Length: 303
Image 1: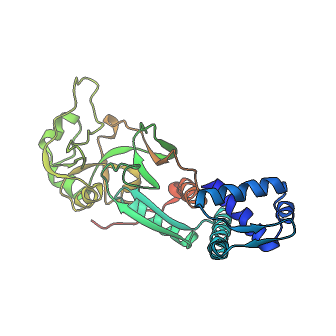
Image 2: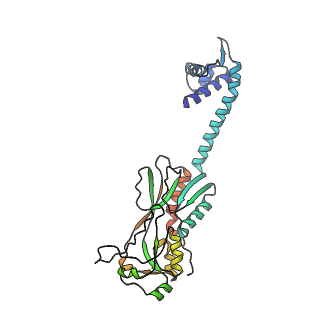
Image 3: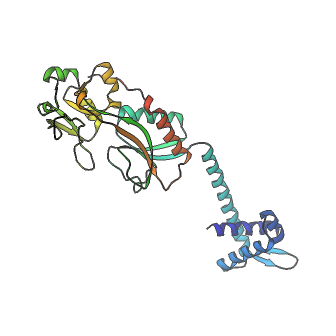
């Protein structure tokens, strides 16, 4: 393809200057190199493009027809170069991303990013499922857990903790558990992973216990936003990330449960295909989320 484009460029220069020597000077190659390039193109096309003599070079009828097409091809290539150079200067274009369905963290970040980069068009898949970044054609995804796919590049955006929480109203009605074994007698709001159907493990364990505590299930949900709402409504104890509960803990609409028995640290990552260069628009997304994720204001939700 590149050889064809260079041949087209040589052909157009000869056609416009009527000289192999002048075309070579403009292209900064020898006249013989120009002649060989045009000859290869003629052989490939199966037509003569020029009438050659010792005194003149003129286009054949086929050459005249071919010249207009070649000029348009060169103009398109030049325009593509201009557009790419503009992309390098200013982030713009479409980004297809997948992010967790997490209103209190992700939505403010997306809103802020759109205001900061109005020339970037976002195509957002809001889902807690584990998408296949490569096969489904995503430019980037945000996920928790340690990255394990060698096909992906990764950048750590921040850390979070899982903790047990419940509303003051629920604790007043049902009592506050003081030991993990007591969770079997409580309404537990559980998160189920959409892809596998497995329940998310609660990171709570007594020192004298050999296994995780038994939990009293009342509902399982595939989105943590739903569990947050149910906990605020006083319907049970939930295990939630601290970034989704910090405001509710501050204003007293949620309280921590069994903090002495809970120990968890997790990471939030931006992942993108390693086969692709980080374009200006993707780099802008990565840098913006990394810089602003810790400063996302958490809205107050009334229980």
